[in-house]
Image 1 (cartoon, rainbow, N blue to C red):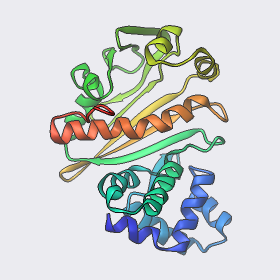
Image 2: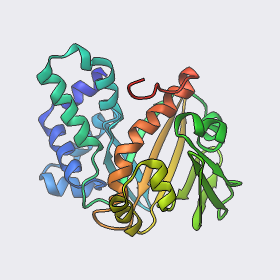
Image 3: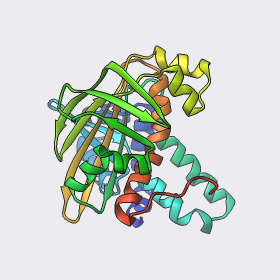
Length: 264
């Protein structure tokens, strides 16, 4: 956590975070041009931010895209929030919301965390219903082969659609699939009203990718949720849901117990 505070203490690095908050997923060249900073300076600042896990990167062909990452802010809030006065707590909360909120012009939400586990165990937690039900409340019916259909089961409701498919499956390093269909049955179980459901259903189908990288005794998990429409309602929804979901996954793998239910 000391690295997070040191990273945020520099005005140049805060400008980089502001730039990514306004337009996420920028290349090094784009950040240099927007901030009118030398390439070497931006590279050094990005290195510090990546080390503090405030920025994460995703490869797209030959390009390296930089994204804000909310995980360390979540950790700071969880550990220290009760020790700060109201003003400081509000400042942390504001920063956390800023990092988690996907700007309306963006097409992807990216979230990175580090989990004390193995790639094989993490893969199992992402695919095995015995795990997914515990931290997500969802089970998947599929053989996890690329091109295979997926059925989502949540709260007794089964959602099937020909477009719900596994896109990539490379155990235990990479998994990608299309998002579920926003049916009236799903909305009723999830407590989503018809107006919101219709907005979600109007979006073209999005997809989520899990990138798993072993790092010593931990595993780096990067979740990339991509949409195809500017101002995606789906992206706005999942950008709020993924941090809590990944936190529950991390807690289950590291402690053997899921996060407690809110207000439990």
